[in-house]
Structure formats: C-alpha cells, structure tokens
Image (cartoon, rainbow, N blue to C red):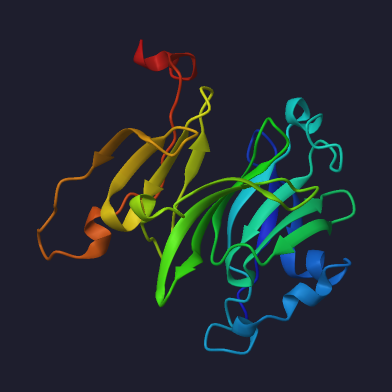
Length: 226
C-alpha cells in the first residue's frame, strides 16, 4: 500500500472541481525519474511523496515568473527532496528541482521572481546537520540569499517549518522544535523573536513547545479586530 497525494481544487462553496494526482503528474512529465529515490525502497516507501506545501502562482505575481503561467501550482514534496511546479491544465510537472535541500517545507513565490524555501536538513557541518532558509532563482538555480549557514545563525528542525517574506524585506520563520518565532533582516540580523514558555504538564515533550506555522497579517486583513 502507498499513501497517494493529490491537489484538490475547490469552488468558493467548497465543491470539488478537480483532483490532480501528484504521482501521475510526475510520471507523465519529463521529471518522472525523480520518482526513483532512496526512500522509495526504504521503510518509508509507503509515504513516497509526503507533499507538505501547495502555492498557486497568482496573476499579479506571474509577471515575475515568465517561465510559468498564472494558475500554475508549486508543491513541496518532502520525501523526494523536490520542489515542483504543475500545470493544472495538462496535469503535469513542468519544472522541478532537488539537490539543494533535504526534507524541505514552505516553498513560496517571491515578488522578485525567486523562490523561498525552508530547508530542514540540507546544511551539514562535519557530522552535524542544520536547517537553512534559501532563496533561489528558478531560472538559474543559483542561491541568491540564505540564512542559517553562519555559526551564529545555526538552528535545526528535522520536521515542520514555515516562513514568510515580509513587505519590508525581512523574513519571518518558525523554529518549531524550540517553540521559537524569529524575524530576520536581509543581513541575517534578528529583528524580533518570541519563544513559547516551557510546558511541562502532563509530561514534557518536544511537541509540547512546538510552533508549526506562522504568518503576519496586516490590520487590513483582520477587519474584525477593529
């Protein structure tokens, strides 16, 4: 048995309009060989994909990504260490890449035409593994910005993780395993952070203090709070 992942497109009323299977989206594309990866033969073979993020390229952002079209869908496929873009019209992967990141989350389109990625396990120093935040150019695959590679920036989250590029250019992200929210500027300096207090009841576990997701809202987005 294998766990299958799908992209589900809903109407505003919640009616299912379309269902795109991710296995077939890869299989029927030039990126089919990415389906053959180490975890496909290991103990986690039942969870072949483990997709964890889906993002639609909105029309106002599409001008920054001439290689894609409005409505294309980007997915982060954790167990394949792959980020892929799918054309919902053909139901096929039209762009995909792996190799820079491991067990990644939260792939996001940016207004400068780049992609922001939460790279959970892709940075190694000796025998130690650390988490990074990467900004890449999908046309050249060059890393244009990163956080977490300097010794004073190191942190590690084996699983989970979310981020957001803010209007002022800063980046907001979670450090889930340590119950931390952090905002950094373009130089990697911490502008603001928050840590959850320790929770020890009933039993202290790492997940008790985890922050899995984060998003900053403007006042205009939350009119009910006025």
